[in-house]
Length: 255
Figure 1 (cartoon, one colour):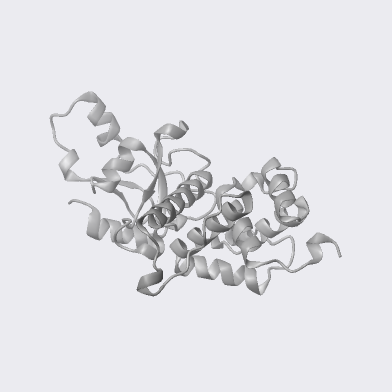
Figure 2: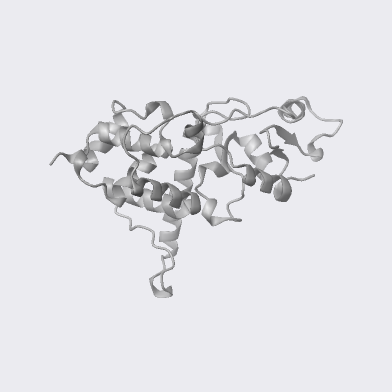
């Protein structure tokens, strides 16, 4: 039986979903070397992997608005995984990273929630899982914004952060959700994190009065006063969630 005809396992779906989240939309094709290599590792054809990734793309409301349709049949399992990610991104991200780590030989066990006390992960295991969630989130956000700051257009990866809209400590289910993120340069990421800037319902910059003082250095004026009202560049997928932005304006922004 051809490899692409066999049923997809849950680990395979998680691994391809991980690929979808971290691959720029224009590279979801069977000639992409990363897709070719992943297909080899899981015993699928590059075309089957690319098609499965595009099926996940077709479930994204932002892609549906652009009339992006699945190249194959979206399965019940595809849709269930997408819905589970929307409900608890942290768990799916942990499982996806664990499945990929096992595939390439890193050998870390998968995340299982609600374990009895005696079976709960050690501190070392929790650090590994936290790093995996952070890695998943950063890759998904940066690739969605084409590795470009949404506010300034900076493309130097070392100066880019995946900024959480609803803070990490507030809602664990949204820690890995790319819709809870915006790609910002390090300066504006810190200002956003500290509530010194936010974004309105039309994705325009709102600057805190704390930064709008009359006597400021030139760099301060250029970095903050002159960006007030500027609309960010929106991502190709995982549009920033407006409820998350509302939370930031009401609970984080310093008026």
